[in-house]
Length: 357
Image 1 (cartoon, rainbow, N blue to C red):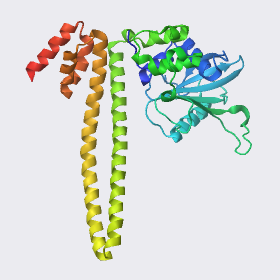
Image 2: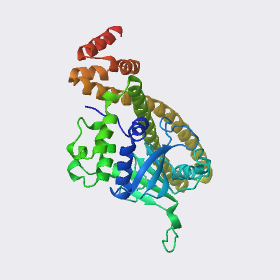
Image 3: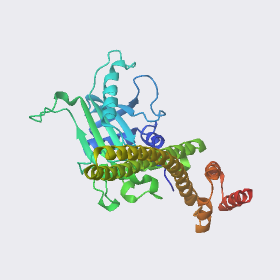
Image 4: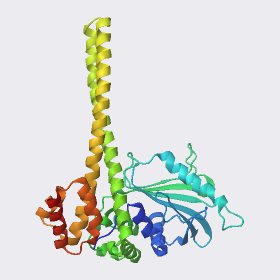
């Protein structure tokens, strides 16, 4: 068995936002927010503008919930793949909170408490070790909570969660482990299967249950994420290199200022600054272009090899042949991979590519 990655927008919403997801949502939210107690009794996926949110990429799932049989509230549920500014998180939470006034299904809209839940595939709070963080409004000097707890933020940072299967203690631990590791599992571990709702989540994530179009969409989203992550990493490396070079250059300039007269030093300084800036600009343009192309091709190759390995268990020679394909050939292989029934068809396809070169 193989499973789609719950950290992609499509897979996350297929698992938690489909018509079959009611029990999954209840288990997941109660596990994270209420330590497994059944405080949340019912949930309903809604959109205050009358559109379905399930199919909208990069848009949170908005849920109406009933707590303890009486309190009504709103949950915003979203997975974030790439580093996000804190202001943007606050903006979306405030927007969902205020949009309750425009709920077309209620004749007299009522402002309900809102909890914005964000699951991240990156570390958002470097100063905190725990993977789970909760925020509410509090009075600064006395730590007094704002009455009614109308607006809150809840974060789960997956990179901070390091527990292995045998270390899982709570249902919340099991759900976080599922989100982080489902895409690399080949079977459903007994430690997770004991939770019926997690078993249902695995069934929705099973690659065999997808249509050709859905599988292609998952591939596209994985490639897009890999491309953006590579671009971010490349930008950070360039920034570090540029900072080191500028620091070294500054030291040289200060030495020149001490050892030569002001007029000679000023001329040398101007010439070096112009040369450095021109060199940095040219190097950055060339490096970004090359790195982005290599990053895109590496991302495609990784996904294609993972797919084909799961289906045919490729030998080393076949993997090396695939790694030698051009970017255009990898695109054609990605389009054809789903149609291969046997590994012989894959080998025939590779031999044909070699002859066409």
